[in-house]
Length: 475
Picture 1 (cartoon, helix red, strand yellow):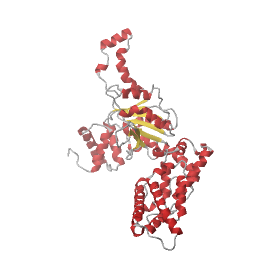
Picture 2 (tube, rainbow, N blue to C red; picture 1 turned 120 degrees about the horizontal axis):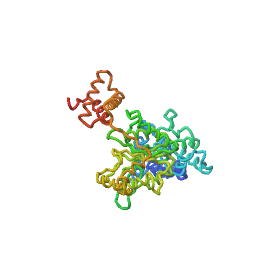
Picture 3 (cartoon, rainbow, N blue to C red; picture 1 turned 180 degrees about the vertical axis):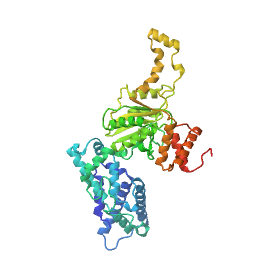
């Protein structure tokens, strides 16, 4: 059974945290704190009482069991969040280590920007003290806690046998803060991890969407923030076929960017289904372990650039703002805002941010013949030197020109289309004989005529159908 002094010291260590006070907000910590506060007076009476202990009232037992049940529910739900292999791996070392990595505070933000060696002596000392306290907090035995609650609650408490472990050196150690090593000695490893992956929510995910908060009421101004993409498209560079030259340009620009060198905003323009968006996602995923984050910004949210810049500019990571399928029906305020964002506005784009956009329109704006000067107007402009006849056209061209690099994705010819389809099928083990290959090519040509024309997307859809084993629509 656990002792009163252990619970009292646990609460004092929790209250003494300097930087990692954010863990107070976690439901598990709140339930543990509530349980400790409930058990301490019961243990004090037991420690100073006689051999017989006055039994708890029904109300006291119900209160204690309810707190325990809520704690147990929280612990079990955590297995889904931190990907434990079984409930028997539940211990506070693993859980608190992950909470440390998830917490965004003055220390973790400093570690994101600078190596541990560049921290001031005062900051490093406070950080090590916090890590020691967290290590002590993680040492609270959940098994002893279970036994203590059972002692007071009696048969009202039921828990699976061997739900918790106390200490098992055979389990897989935590990637940064293992249970067998005092965490203050791991501050360098903690700093290296945060510098690579990021602090807080940015350190837990690779891709995000800038969008409005979910609010319970519509009162007050709208608030926007970064939301992690929980079910990210897993596409990787090895999954892409064809367009090697175009992809190499995107890879090289991205490499320069993450290395802190000059890099350009990029416009990926071309026919539909040619892999423009897939290229951006795959390239950014390839550089994820070097501190690159992908943030999708929808066209309607481009006017929030000042908020986005303020959120990202002070971070020690690099960010690609991804605008997918960008086009404008007219030169509206969003069009003007994006122009200023790319180049020419008073608000400078942060050095750790570049913009990658995809579009099916070369100049991004829907063009009308009425916007072009007539032959007579053009001739008059050339004679008089008056360029105003071309103002509308120049305005439309000006946005695309502000992307430093434009990469063109054209629809593949027949052989390129077949090569892409074959490459996808080979990766999935669908082509085993030459007769399979010949029939595959014939059906691939039929498929593109029946459906969406030649493109990598069409090739992927064809292979997906083939993998399903069903007859083709024309059979």
